Length: 72
Image (cartoon, rainbow, N blue to C red; front, top):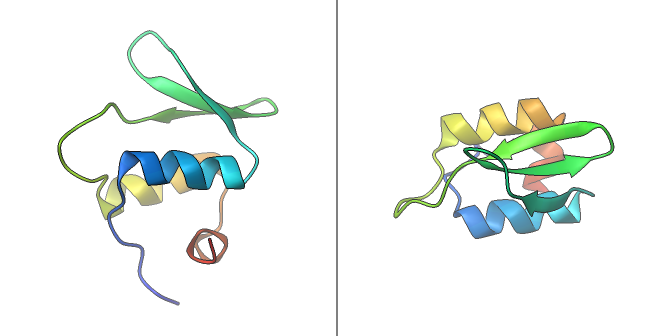
């Protein structure tokens, strides 16, 4: 299986939408995306990409398998 690589925030949001998530919606400190009762916080906008470790954590919180993510 290919390794997960850093990703831009906009691409993260587009991929989450492809997987059935809605949003992002404004939160108190971070935006978030939802899928049913599941709610995943999205990192704030930064100059750099979202790193591999943070991406792995977001996928765990969202219940997304790495192979499913890589197939997008």
